[in-house]
Length: 329
Image (cartoon, rainbow, N blue to C red):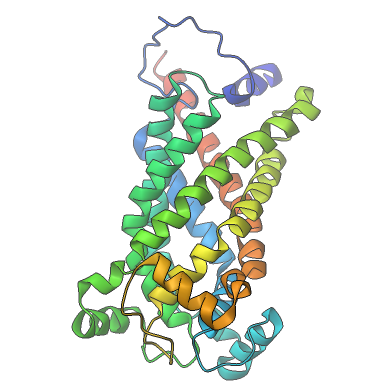
């Protein structure tokens, strides 16, 4: 039984595909997982919820630091931002807007991972080690998921600000619709996609490379250490991608928080114009505001997300195998 279990949990991404090109199994399964589309969606939704809820306080600190550059607050350090939140609102202030995150993260990650897996299967052409396919698939997934997540992300960031004028998620949605119109919910969508495209490319290429390297260190215990491998590779990928894309994240935050709590309102939603304004006011250092909490968010967040996602997929793999065994296949 132990031998069967080991074979079942081995991930084909880490070994050559042995089937010939014309091999067609009886059941329509993915070339690398054997899961149904809805199972990818549920696994991704769970992973996204766990990731963002666990790391939400760090995200709140990052939002404060990035918005403070245009708000009437002098200090933008991690400690000062944290102290400011705790002093003005207490520990509950670290979780302001978490409802919006909950409403957005689940559906967005369901779209993200399911689109990623479908595109990965399509673009890889049966090659599970095609890193270019991973990057392209991640970009496709980003474009789709950001369309779902951006409105709630905007609401979340406005609620995260100190002295936010909104009483809650629904109050923010109603007032933004009334005062700024529907377009305000997508004011940062272009910036978000432009940011997340390279973020995803760096993230997935780093993740796949780190995962492969870790697996090669101890291939004989690959299946036993799978959770640790995904967590470590995910953390490295998340940290690097977060640092590289911080300037665009600063632009996104300021576009989403414009006109709130004294933050600047921009006449143009152009990424270039906002970048120029930030550099003119704060220098190039202003473009890296919040990189520390952003890295501290994305490193453990990616580790949590990938570990949770893979654990959920393993659960569904087990479920599918049990169903197939029960039906005599």
